[in-house]
Image 1 (cartoon, rainbow, N blue to C red):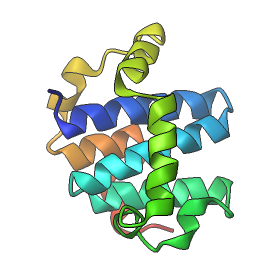
Image 2 (image 1 turned 45 degrees about the vertical axis):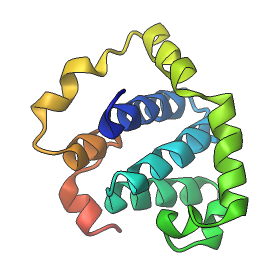
Image 3 (image 1 turned 60 degrees about the vertical axis):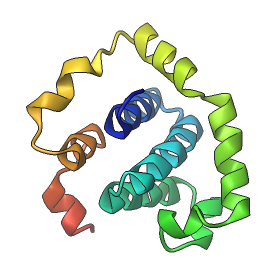
Image 4 (image 1 turned 90 degrees about the vertical axis):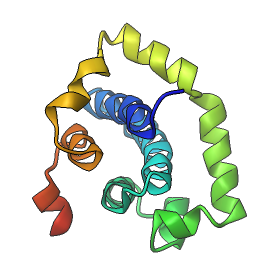
Length: 134
């Protein structure tokens, strides 16, 4: 089984690719999954950054109802949304999409000090920026 950081990287890579293609609604769906994985992997700053990014694009998104992704994961409405997105983008499909984009993250993680630093880099930010969001 893949480590949570590896699974998180898959969804963050896809979210980044969706952003570059200007498919922001798709990016937001992928960030919902990534935020949930980050929260469950005890990476709250990554989860919070994903949440903020979603809300910057769509201030009315369901995730706005909770102050944190960790809180959202305790709610059946959010879990219903999450499961729906996960059915649309299961891990196997997400990995195949990553392959079609010719992205191979297999050795990337080793160039970072922590899973959080790696995830921040994939989000296009740094740990310092996560610490002091604007």
